[in-house]
Length: 393
Ligand code: PMP
Image (cartoon, rainbow, N blue to C red):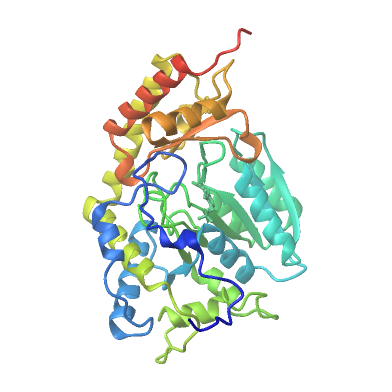
């Protein structure tokens, strides 16, 4: 044979065919993707700027406007995960040297503060221990003290299992001439949320939670007030990829007649995202909110009947999509999650950030938010508590 000029041979591992195992994805995300949405993602590839693609993107905008309950023109999906949308929100709305206030009641506030610091913002935080939330009065006072251009709040804190109330905060922000930014990655579709009525200026989510689409796209919407700030900056945002002027043009929501190539959108992911929004529209947003609440209550009752304790004491503050359970005393939480994965092919997870070691987290989102999933998780937990090592405390 001819001598090869390659010094790295074709890897042997790539000769094996890969088949993904079937798992019940009951952690805080990604959730299971139903066949209909998987099939949409397997459609043939077309160009990222073909007319049919622009139609799909326009459908996504409409679907996100419905899911967010907003009439905002600048509504699109970032090509990236929830973090990309988080950076898109902060990179575009904040200039170096400006003041930002972040509500930290879990890991997502920490991350938002980190991102805002990286772009040279002056970051202040209000803080509460894991499991807590803020009163409108506390927020009002902090805004008066720090005078930020932007206030960041997480609607569904997936690290602690808290659903933060939103009513009235938008008005308070606007009274202080401040943009209201909300992370609804873990809550959208699973809990009531009205972007326009609640005065939210920037709202973003992810594809892989209640929407049951593959990870990789992140819906985001900007109010007119937010656009005003983002489109009249002194300095360009540090990221070209996440520059809202470019994204709004690519998505056809800047009113300009010509669209210019910015980046190659993830075509298959847009197909799946569109399909997932179609499922939500078909089911009805309010029905989806109601179902997640009912299933969560059924789950919580079942957990308490087993003698387990919920991490969030106030029922009204419990996030219906992600439940945090106090880590069962005497057990190693890692042994429990591994046992359940091994014997039940079911993912639940431990804590994250401030809740590490303190909780188990179970996500029942979108198609997974049904009583049959609850029964499966309860059975798996019962089995694990019987068979995992318990120390005598
Ligand atoms: N915010 C919240 C509330 C989340 O739950 C997550 C994902 N766990 C993110 C942001 C980040 O999303 P991603 O992992 O898709 O980047």
